Image (cartoon, rainbow, N blue to C red; front, side, top):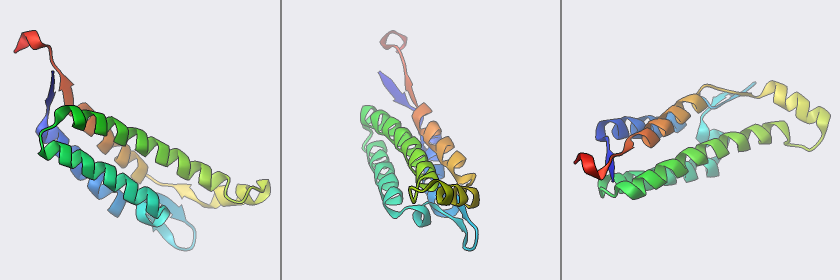
Length: 133
């Protein structure tokens, strides 16, 4: 049986909601810092959609669904990071131009905060033994 640590889950949700909107995810030389929406719109909407499903499962008190969705959300965040990293390093398909682009675009600290929020969500569900009830 699983229990949900509600305060921990709420903190994880707040961090995960605020991070893609307000924190820098990519440094572009002339334009400045970009959040997740400016980095990739589809990645932003899918991330918020999965987080919305997590919130729905939280409010409907479906702990097993919430547990599954939080793990999926963490995997999606990792996949999004890897996708943005490879997009920066292989955008044009030409080694010289891609090398220049990867030296000018820099990943920022917003990714770390997003991963922290996802990890808090994953660790907010705890498995307990049926005998300790």
